[in-house]
Length: 430
Image (cartoon, rainbow, N blue to C red):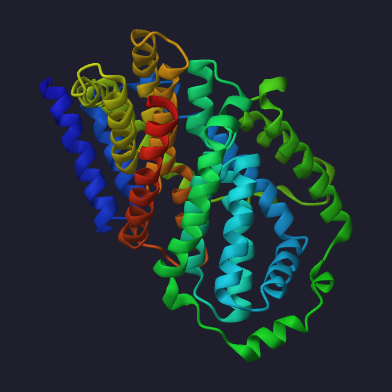
């Protein structure tokens, strides 16, 4: 590698160390790292702001912004209080049952929408129901972030890396359902079992609080029924447009911004009220992270690492697929899986063609998707949903540290990727 490439690695690792140790606020660390990358010419303005491969992913930023505005309006209707009481009553106030219910809802919603939108919607419910039952919110938020990444892997629209893979490979919505969804169902069953073990200290049942919440009428929580129906109509249209992305060809970011604009314009909600719930630090953190990773892309670091990992398999399809799965999981744990997949997709496309381009060679796409989606669970910055959850937790004065997330995420990522390994081998390589 060149001297500039080594310098970009040093800048990235330094910023990452500051994020991990929390010696400096993560936003300051990300922006500082991005600034140094630009200052030393590891990247430039053209690459940082306009390049689809190495720049800020504005689709992600505006998707987040639009959905945050919609969630901010929804919050004023009382719908989250309604859902919190409803969920607690269905679980009869028992913490583990509640976590299972929230985790399954999160996974299913993430498959139909996208995992970032889902955690934006489910997190406010989680805080309210945990407050009602005097439960710690952090274990529930961690479980939901990880469930969103697992569930989102099931479909083309569920996780941003899948959209990138589909665009590059020509795979359809139904292809993802057939090849990804069956294994995701199995992984969710295993994940629920892991939750019972990993978060067992949080499952303290309080009969008095449970009885109190069972006596509540969730319908009384609705504060503005007119605004609720207006918001739900807009949200339903936005969700439908997400699902119909392969037909409508509107990017999720465009749909979210249009939905937010219509909702604010058509209701009595003021602009100030609508943007009050926007997680600006989270958006800025993402921008800095994208620029830093873009510096690694521009200097060829990520490409060289990926090619070296694949080259070590000596052209054997089975070894290449398994190596790609684990390398993708490992790298996605360190850098956000969106820019990683954007960088790796052209390499995988070449590998698929080199292996004949047939159905069996398509296993390389599934290895990339599984590795990136599931590996994103390993650390707090591995996936967009993780960063959003941490931002919401900080806003609600329930901070989640980098290592608190990572000590649970590493276990979940390792177990799920380990289970996918024999699945890929037995289904595609035998």
